[in-house]
Image 1 (cartoon, rainbow, N blue to C red):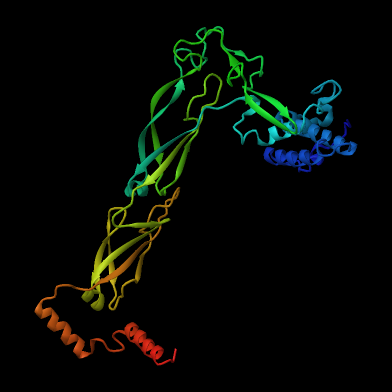
Image 2: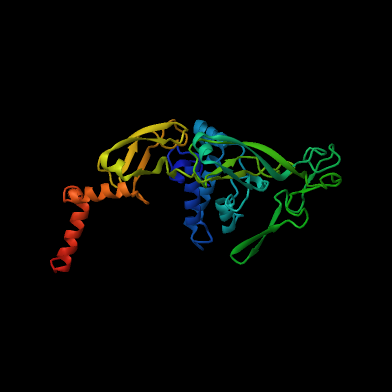
Length: 375
């Protein structure tokens, strides 16, 4: 292996590339030049070894810092193995393991995590507007206090690393091109062997318990929002990272308001006379206050009036959306004799003339043209 390689050039990344960029570059190049994909191609095999050599240094923060400062001299006199780096033992399955291990639930060094949990929380429309703290009860597994989560009754003699899987909790067997992983039959997937199991948790390191947690639900949250509480899921036993807790928020509907993001819509009925003459009405606002709204003379059903800054809270912001008043003109029923006489007088006095009802007049004019074949 050449010792004058520029590891950054090998992986085709800049010297200020972060860990994610380096990992992506390695995945792409390793898949491209892997010997299993290039049988008999010596050049591809050498390129593959260079890629692995570069990645082995740049993926490790300490090695990378030493390389950036001293170059290859930082590794002279002793390396990751006699005569350099050892790359030849892994098949294509090793590349898949490095690329997709996290997606399949794997953890670095074979470590596993406790199970993720999910709970549903229902809040009112007003609570979603202002934000709220909710107490939730979560049935889960927690660390056993008797053995401090070790699973062993003898704290001076904790669990041993499983000799079959070397602590990985799984064993792998090759079947043709593919590798199949199964839980280790010796330790049943735990990666550990306990000679003297704890009498309380029976060696699992965890016990079942209902936990009470307080969840802060922020103002502006929407129905269906999912809140993640890291490490508040199920305990995984000794040395295993706890899972996460996912809180699914359900917002109850409101009898007056409909929400669209940060905007609020409210249908407000007004009497026919109010819409015709114009008036001022008072409407409720989601924050519990009231606002006065002017209804212009001649307002029609379906017209919308806007109140700026009277809408819903914006998530993680002090801003608010707008409130829209959707006017519904209400036609009176059960008229008295006097009311009917007044309306008949209004109609006979030209209440339905062209200028008074332009929409109606225009519609029936088009109907006439249609029936006469003009449209």
